[in-house]
Image (cartoon, rainbow, N blue to C red):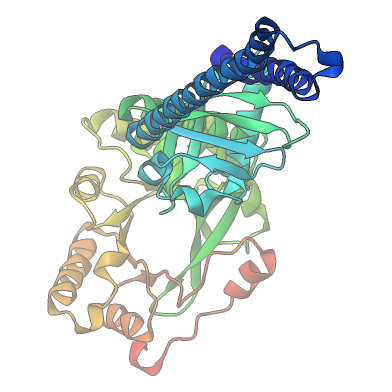
Length: 454
């Protein structure tokens, strides 16, 4: 930095020296030419005058040559430095960037293409929210503001790849003050975090967001109807959790993340409490199915929560999910036994989609078996699915369970499952999930079945 800032001052000094030398040379030349009053008649005087003319000119010529050589050397050094910087920018694993005071990119190194899928010229002039969501940018700004001084290091930021995937980066940078030539902004470097560190950062952020959702009660309940396939009567509803401001991720994502970060029971209890509270607006007499993992069933808070709901046990169904595998069923059965004696029923969700769900069926002997939608979609023209569906109907009859077909979306699927003798159905064709009481009231009317399903 000092070498570059000193070069203009050296050039200015050389220009001044050359100017002075030229003044001396011009003055001496004028005396020789004009020869006022014959002061240069003597040979010795003429020689001295000639030296006065030639010496400054020779010195000026020497200085000019030295200046020219120095300028060329400086250009070569500058060119070599620029080439070295280009090499660093091209080969570096760190992304060098700069944005103006409006958040628009003014510089991007080629590494942006490797890390984010965007070429530098595609980023220039674009706002930085092209590669980072507003919420993540706001959190990053808070971390930067907490740093002492104009610079910061080691801020963890979740960026967005061109394909929509998350890219976790460690960002360091500094505030760029405004000058007469350019506006202020920020400039710095970003590097991708190692996979393990990125996973830890993601888990930490998701835990923070989940805890915020729980603290601020940002959960809603949508109900989806379950109808009898024999009579069309509304039998019950399944409670489905929805999140307010879920940042684009669905409920399945957040429940999986809750299991990873140790908040599954807290989230499931919050969802259950919200569902039981909302269920007060449902048509009377129907049951409410609540999704619950076997792990949360073992939580001692469960009986008290169900009792405080105000719903009679016969109107409550606990749907055991497949989120976590059960290694030992005896404790689970012991917890559920007194609840079942009071009239609460157990359902196994997504039966047939995996080994764990069938283990639940065999060990728990549920009152309700819900066949996964993967076994229902296209069942009307798939012999294998049709045969499996018929076998499950007989199996449910043998153990005295109600068989519900999930994911019914076409009249052909509805006709096929009803023809096989399945007890009840659920799916978009029958009724979509809704948070609106007016839809819940409309479901109480008997579902109209087609002529082939009577």
